[in-house]
Image 1: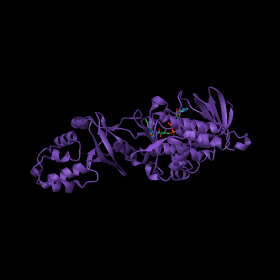
Image 2 (image 1 turned 90 degrees about the vertical axis):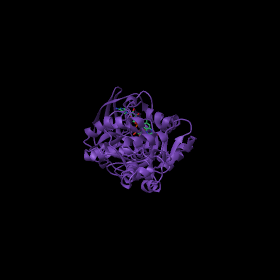
Image 3 (image 1 turned 120 degrees about the horizontal axis):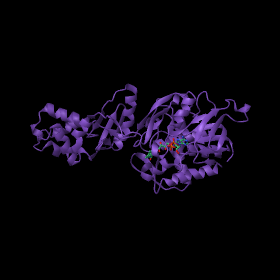
Length: 406
Ligand code: FDA
């Protein structure tokens, strides 16, 4: 290992490996370092071990960021098509699941091996495990220092580079190596932050709601879950702590974003009959002698339908409800409001909402404004994808974008 590089990338996760590989293939001398013992644990455990590595349909609408347009440029230059080409070139078999999600056929390890091979093609040096104790800015104008702008103090001495890429990710799953390192670097260089929060995370419910919902615990059903402008039609699950399932994970990011903006905890709204006009459906059955839970069991799991009706005191035959009551039932079926008390936190979160404010970064190069040679890629910045391969696609796209300029 040398002491001086063109580029040092801190964090050998998805974005860091991508950036190091492509920068190396441009002929830059690159060092990739990571404090973890094991390489790319997050890729390994992703997608249930099969890595949902991208999505067939990726657009700015699949991301949350204070600047919703920030992702456009990088996604346009290196999107899912380009990443699929790379995966195909490495002979990795994949399949499509619902909502355009692409997964490896056998194991996420194939993606890690592919990125390692791309790094080897770029002649990338590795330092792992190795932490960085301190970063000093040497000079903004690298021509005065023979290409040295940043000095990194480590247990293996001082390393210098012209371009420094921060790819240390967010805070989710601390037990496999997540740290706030990137946020501290942002702070050191005076870059603004959007407060980080766990996202794509199960929501908790207050004890009084949990007690009421206890009979529903374990029930899984299709919903349209909504909060503010986020709306997702997928499965939801009632757990002994609150709400989970893909629809809830998706909407948790929007719930967190609104809580950050308003300081208020608004309810999440569940449409239990997505795609159905509940009012018209109930009206068509208003004269039936069947019990409401039995009618609902045509659309919802029977146990859930029964417990949900008991919860509301609505277990009578349909023809015994007054029109106003039927209207209230239709309203509750269409927009059942549940106000979470919080989330299950970073231990269970797939990603971190917030991070380095994109207003301080170039959307073309990922370089920090006012700090030549300092780049941020991947989840460390305030870009959070929906569930479905979008977070890895951001890691690939932003890593690739920076690699062209470092
Ligand atoms: P990433 O977290 O991958 O890498 C950061 C690296 O920096 C790590 O190697 C870490 O060790 C290192 N690091 C941290 N602090 C450091 C320090 N102080 N010094 C040195 N190194 C340091 N997304 C998706 O699109 N499809 C999916 O299937 C899944 N599945 C999934 C499952 C689970 C359980 C989780 C937790 C997350 C997912 N995700 C996902 C999200 C996805 O894993 C995530 O968005 C990307 O890995 C982010 O890539 P980054 O490279 O930015 O960070």
